[in-house]
Length: 325
Ligand SMILES: Nc1ncnc2c1ncn2[C@@H]1O[C@H](COP(=O)(O)OP(=O)(O)OP(=O)(O)O)[C@@H](O)[C@H]1O
Ligand SMILES: [Mg+2]
Ligand SMILES: [Zn+2]
Image (cartoon, rainbow, N blue to C red; front, side):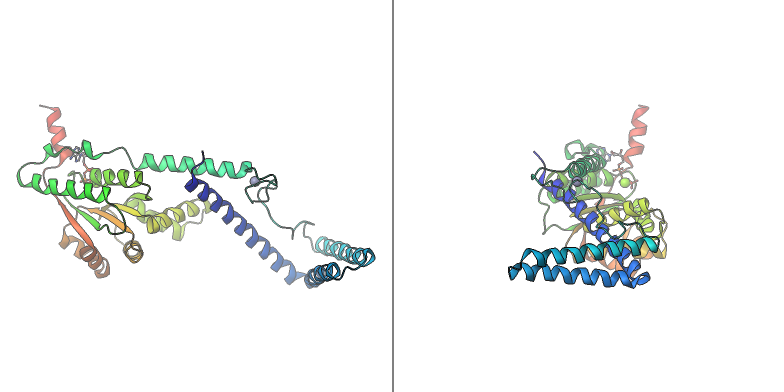
């Protein structure tokens, strides 16, 4: 059984390919028309002939009339080919461009069966989905150990754990945005990935991005000249802006530039406007956030996000000590 969501994505991919090919063909036509206006005239005459065929059919014209139209149309086509050749264009230069000649990029064959090219796209979508799932990791709430936190820190962390659990199981349009705030090694990444797994498992699109990777994608999308890098980073940016839940981890570890400031503002503002939910985690305090980011960003973080404060001792350090006990 094929997954409908993945199949829809595969077909969207094919539709985009059709559009690209159509755009490419339109460009070719424009170039040829500019260089060889006679070809534009021939095309116009061919279109007019199409009209004649239709009215001939409607008025039940005899076979001679149709044969005459056929003859003139053949003549025009040959004239076009001669003109193309005379100006150094390949004879099929103006033909429809298709990536898969078997289905002409429709994805299905005449007998209704699926074309191999669409099957291949479907497989690629499936693999991408699996890779994504692997990227979201295997952290789960049941492995989150409150035993690492003592005293008052434990109370904060019980609250953080309960809030994240609640967020994950009830995720939907009414969910808040979360700011996970606190020192290093306290479980921010761990908990946010627990949330990612549960929310993604419930069928929402979830993207987890360390801040540095997120900003690198924006930069590549803006500045990369390599088409593959550009394509990949554009997809990543698109996902960051539009997925149901974005987890932006380790905000503040990036080198802050005018570019990252505007990218961050863009992420937050686009998502807030669309009602999409975001979890931001950071080592920075409120004061440090206010010092580092532009007021528009700070205002959104403080006004539109619920803060969960992480407290305690660095669990990386605790684990290291225990290794020597
Ligand atoms: N409550 C917990 N129970 C078990 N392991 C935990 C818990 N919290 C964190 N860990 C583990 O401790 C390490 C540090 O946690 P994590 O990476 O989530 O910290 P962080 O708050 O994101 O730190 P940083 O600010 O440096 O990114 C990880 O290996 C993580 O799996
Ligand atoms: Mg972290
Ligand atoms: Zn095909």
